[in-house]
Structures are given as structure tokens and as C-alpha cells.
Length: 117
Image (cartoon, rainbow, N blue to C red):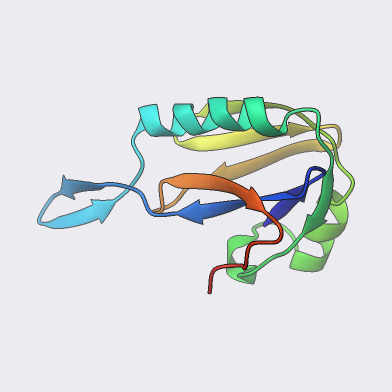
């Protein structure tokens, strides 16, 4: 999780159901991903990342969680983009690419709120 300078954390949450073959899959649709991108653009662009918590190390690809945290802490968010179902956060130190996976959304919430378990 990334905490931005105003003290809010983006947190994954549930998506919507759709039929995929013989089973129901919870996968975000492109319009939902674009809506999230626009909301993030308005909420976190020009803010600085003040803390990073890796809750599941398997979700960090290309580096170890400690290095991931070091590289993101202190970075300033410059903008957002979308490539298919991937969200791209443009940072002053490069790019952070996110996939919403099965959840289908991100939420911003105050740091005083308890983390989900």
C-alpha cells in the first residue's frame, strides 16, 4: 500500500461480477479502470508518497519488497495513465504499473482507519 502526503492509503476492494465461460469471475471492465484512473489523477497527482507497506510480497514483481519500498518512498506522483486494464502512475522516479486483478477498484482512506485483514 502507498500512503500519500495527505495521509490517505489506496486500498483494493471488491469488483463486480460477470460471466466468464462456466464460472463467475470478478474482473474490472475497461470503463471501471478508466474511472479509477481519473479519480486517482484528481486525488493524488502532485502529492508525495510518504510510506509504502508491502502486505503480500508475491505481488511485487521485479524487485524485493524492501527495495520496492525504498524506491517509492519520497517519490512525487506526476500523473496517471491506463494501458488496457493496467494503471500507470507516473512518478518523478519512473513508472509504477498496477493491475487491479480480481478486486476491480482502489479506495483512498484516512491512515487512522484500520487496515483490512
